[in-house]
Length: 153
Image (cartoon, rainbow, N blue to C red; front, side, top):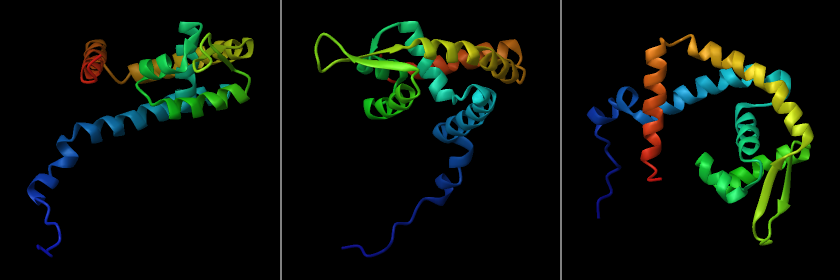
């Protein structure tokens, strides 16, 4: 039995901060999220809530399972986030034809909040886009879309 502690390969470990895609994507995500969160704050929304409201609005009625699939999140996290929106009166969660299926839709108040938040989102979108040339922006969107292919959908 080997009692020696784990000895990492420090040559590889030193490369992680410069080459780890996960680290770079998470850092970029936090930075971008902070910009949108600050912009959406006057509407009482964070980016993840805005994203949920937009997704629900576009779908009109959607099952929690399908919404989780579209947002690439687990149902437990999604349900917890939806409960917050439901308590605020912004979404309705109702049983579907099969009582195991729950349907989500926007309430009138949710549509109002979304309408108030849209110009704030547009401000944040403009601010983020100004950091990139148009060609860079399109390339970035294209590359990020390619990441979806990793999921196998």
